[in-house]
Length: 277
Image (tube, rainbow, N blue to C red; front, side, top):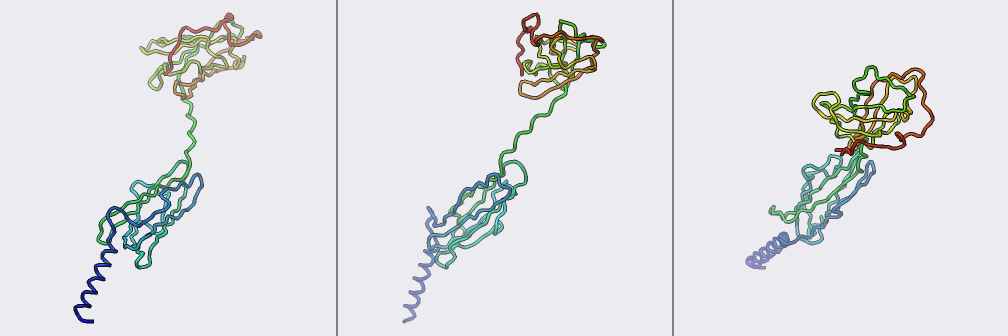
C-alpha cells in the first residue's frame, strides 16, 4: 500500500471514530433506571440505579447528589464520580448502589444527578433520580397551656356551699401570656361541670377583657367536702388544650341533692355567643 493510501485510510478511520464519539445534541443513547424510588417506612434498604449506554458512542458520565439532598442516602461508587460509557470499547453500563438509612421519624428525600457529556465536555443530558424514605411523623399532642383563673372573683376565700342551687362564677383572666377571648367556650369544663352561661368582661379592672363563666353548683361533681382546689379545662379555637386551677373552701356539712347535671332552673342558658379565635 502506498504512503498516500495509508494516510488516506488512517484519516478515514479517525473521522469515523470522531463521528462515533460525538453523539447528536438532541438525544443520547444513555438510559437511567429507575428515575424514582421510595423506600417507604423501612429502617434501611438499598436499590441499584443502572446507567446504561445502548449505543456505540462514547459518553462521559458524572454522578453527584443535588445540593440539599438528605444525608440518609449514600451511593457506591461515592459521588461525585466520573466514568466513560462506551459501547464501542466494551464499557456500556454503570451500576450505582443507593443505600437508605433512617435517622428517625419523618420523610427524607434526595436527588441523584446523572450528567451526560460528550468527550469534549459538552453537556448533553441531565437525568434526575428522585429518592425518598421514611414516613410522616405523627404529630405530637399539644401540651396543656396553664392559664390564670379566678374562682368567685373578688371573694376570699372562695367558699362553695355544695347544697346551693345557685351558680359559681369562674373567670379566665387575660394576661401577657394568654388572651381569654381565644377560648372555645363549648369545650370548657370546671370541676366536672359545663358552663351554663359566659361573657367577655373586664373582671379584674386591668383594662383588658376576661371571660367569665357560670356553673351550676349542683353540677360540680368533682368537688366534695375534702376538696381544696378546683380546675377549669378546655381548648382554644385552634385546639390548644388549656387548664387553670384555683383554691376553694367547701362549706362544712355541704351535701348536694340528687339531680341531673346540666340544667339551671330546668333550662341551660348563655349570656351570648362568644366567637372563639
